[in-house]
Image (cartoon, rainbow over the protein chains, first blue to last red):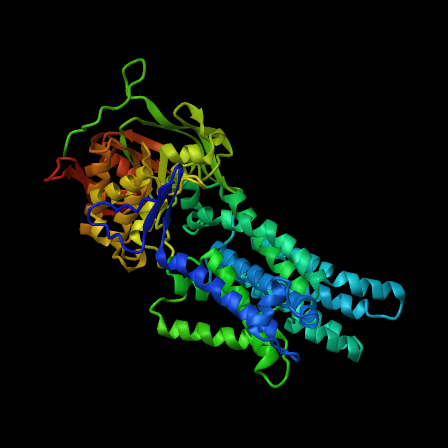
Length: 363
Length: 277
């Protein structure tokens, strides 16, 4: 096995692009694009470890690590692995899903405003979930069962159905980014209007529960939420990463992509399905955590350089944002806020700062 | 004008082989039929310009030839095989196409743009072979774009940008190349620059080229064969001198004009007098 670093032809600068060839495998490696996921991963591990230790029952970082390898004190063991770990794991997974989903949709739509938030996928999932909380929150046993089991499933189905509607309405011999965003904005309003209507019709307890869920929260997550989400991601993340090469060509628009040998319809269908499924499962697990999918890919592309949001880095930065915001919400702030509020408060100014600082326009 | 350096492939009868042909194609966008029952054959090593008034269907025809639009009847044949039954990827190895004003994503460098031309030759594992690297470096320097390799495409001037796209098409390494109005939005000297580049692709690299052009004088000067279309019908086809006659200009463009020899190239040159009707 050998790694060769070659120079490029005359007059072509060699910095920032390194070529790696091992046997039949070859590819281009860009320093910044390789470094960013590594940095993001390190940050994610650190933030997660700190978060595992913080709370009403503080545990030192060394003890946290000890419990993770199974040699900790039994009480600490319980607190870390049963109470805090599921919350953080759900946070990590939701962040990964949202960051990746946003990067896929923005590249696909060639529009930085496109994301599961703006396209109304979150709104659709929310409307379905709130319907379950309000309608299923009754006193009858059947209604309670529906309320208990049905919330994630309802959110998933709601998100998928909304996505189907959006693409159905926006499709005109292919997808136009602007049209997609406009249709999404319209449907988003419809979805949230439905949510408001449901809440005005509900009891005060249901309304409060619905409102917390709607801001996106990692409170009281257990391994029951983490496992299904994890399994879905194990399938979807590799599919998404495998689309990367096609996405690089789809960016040129349908005609050029087809002329370069991409089966445009099939490639688009896979990208959209994966992106929507990622968004829907994340909403099902933690509620609509706004802003992560919109802001993280744009932050990632500015940090990594290049012409489109890097998929892996967007996913990891999404996880950092969600887990970090949850840590902030639980520790620094005087009142324990739902994570969705913090992601917006942290994410938005950071994007604005990057926009003001960068020469790059919002294409 | 330089002589053709590469010998075209010949068929059994000794004539240049037909590479790409439209056979009785009917092209429509929904209910709107743009081209009906058109025949056109592009032989190996030919350089054809398709001319005609706005909305005559010339770009639509080019899209069909490039497999971007499926004929509602008739067929397009590439190297003797119906193009609709050839995979997108196989087509992309033989036939390159530049749409009118292609869009490069913001921040994409020229080197990356040209590298995307290798897409049909790559796979998930084989993303950047030594071949790819050599071809891209060569395409960049052949189009004089090497010095701009690390520049974002959106920071280039219109003429340089078109060069970058042609460089990508060159890197794609296809025998056939279809260009849809490659000179749109360019000033005259850059139009000449782009067409000289296309001509070199034809003569030095042996590419079979079909190009949709608006400027008749430039079309006559650079292309070896002109095809004139009106209302979705092929009106005339032949050498520039055979096609660009005063009668044809009246018929196809509703234009009263004199046709004189171009003092530089000797090809026909159109001097408009007034619009007819």
